[in-house]
Length: 336
Image (cartoon, rainbow, N blue to C red):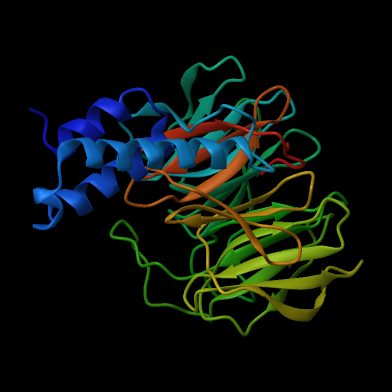
């Protein structure tokens, strides 16, 4: 005779990660309910099987997830994964920040170490020339890294004051760079106290001018822009909100508008203009700010996300100690 959890496990073995998570949660709720424990097993089986069919129907009807596809764990054993960015060949680079290394997940599905140490890099992004930009959290700097891992320190302070810790970065098609600068005190820092407010900055395409463009957020974190360079999305993770701004040729931003009542650690955008936020799994919103999808990830925290692969249809997710992939109908448009 099987109990509730055993029944859920047997059904779950035939499922992908998303459906298994939902089923396991349901079984836990049922198993801990004294009333449910007196329900005949066949009725519980029907309930769990119905949950499976509903989840499968939801995936089949998704506007963005490829039919029949479920979340897959690509690799694990990391300390904390962050900052994924895709190069022009479809390879995804991401950070294992506590271990001070940048990893590479090739378009062929092979894992390797690209750079170690790496300045405790956090957010990453590739520019048009194929250089990898990194928010070097170890020394609160902004780096540009060549294919041979040679480093150029592009920014180390703002008007003589240390950055809090550049966190996430988006490179516009014209070459201008936007990055967030929240304050997360690190045990490995050898610096003094916080010197500036938590803001968003713009670095001109010629790298000669840096301006503070957003200064009224509690704790800016995730950032992404539209491929036409007209809109910028910034997540205020401290306030639990994400805002949308209009971009201008000089790098300035105007017309701040609330996009959704949810903050985010990392962000990406697809070719349909949908915005992907991370934290408790991946939450997807259309360009109007309406939630259209929730992708469950079986980790304590989902830090960041980008599109990778040769066809840019692999949704690549960094989540705590693992990395995950989900094949999509839609595809990515930028490095992130």
